[in-house]
Image (cartoon, rainbow, N blue to C red; front, side, top):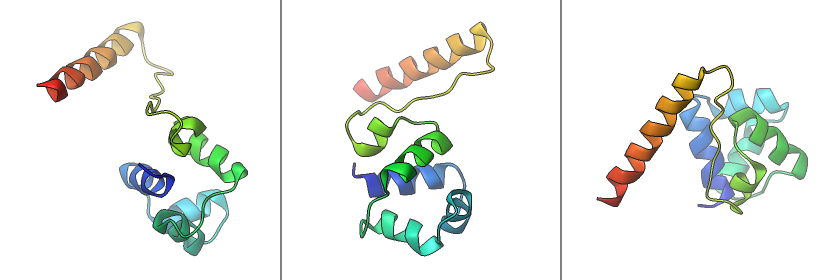
Length: 96
């Protein structure tokens, strides 16, 4: 998946419009649209800001890693265990 697709997917999954994302990054909506259309790519500064905003690694955004991260900050050990079990269950389902 290309960075343009990842930005659009992460934004959509977060329930944000292009305008809302643009506001959070202090850029124009047209700038976000250009990233999502693949017309331009975010600068290093915005790659970092996007990674922090969406709780993913910059490597994931850039396509260097297929692994996205999930923050478990603030969860109990039991809740973290449940999250891991759900992920494992989903992996097993996709292999079937």
